[in-house]
Length: 117
Ligand SMILES: [Zn+2]
Ligand SMILES: [Zn+2]
Image (cartoon, rainbow, N blue to C red; front, side, top):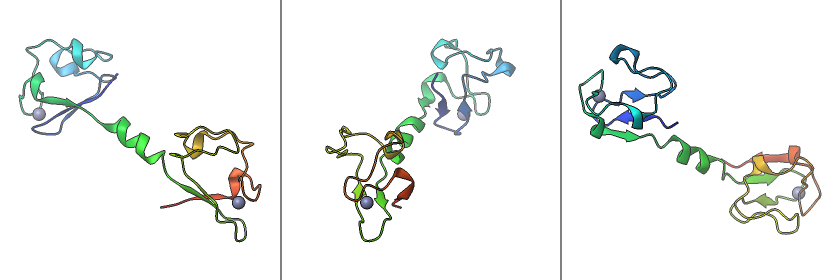
């Protein structure tokens, strides 16, 4: 279930917590809240809430590039390209690579890679 944030005061509605003070039980999806419910902090209406974009941010950080630290190899794994030689499709984050994946240049294991800032 998605979290929603009040666009006026930034109060966050977490479906797992609900809003017990207003009679909204934990586990109630934002969509299932009565239309006359208002933000418990500032009184804004449901229409003033927006879905939190936390998941999009996470997807972005998963697409970080990783570099092989062996000697002068310096191979960089790019999630948007994948690794054709290792049969890794484009869009695979480094974290999702199989543990037996190896650097396609020098054969080093995943442990030898460092995340590029
Ligand atoms: Zn509010
Ligand atoms: Zn390497």
